[in-house]
Length: 137
Image 1 (cartoon, rainbow, N blue to C red):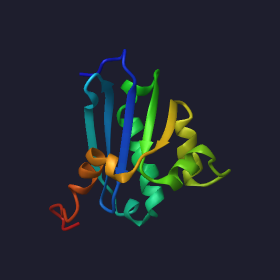
Image 2 (image 1 turned 30 degrees about the horizontal axis):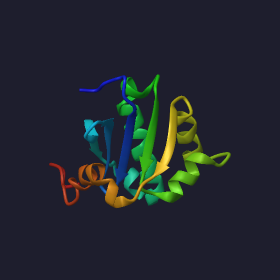
Image 3 (image 1 turned 135 degrees about the horizontal axis):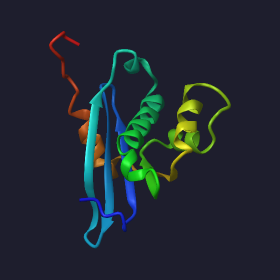
């Protein structure tokens, strides 16, 4: 269960077929997950560059866990350094800038973590690899 007296950490990941997010909290025993979410990408989303997919994963996670994150400070941990720069200094136009503007409503601190530290979100995003639905997609 989430404890609103403790700080939240949001980790995200994207691969070619899905995006995923895990909401975690620091405890006496280390970081513990409180909530998980993932979804497959649409055909249109699959055509994005990887850093755009990573940004989509961030947006997915923040919006999915909005009830937990809306009024608290939290750490956003991403494993893509280019995305860290984009979130810190968005361009004046384009899709990434619009997505970054949607994130400005939240009190977050962006941190880069190594891919080896992003195990849970990475596993959730990759569980859909090779998946085809009833229509063969």
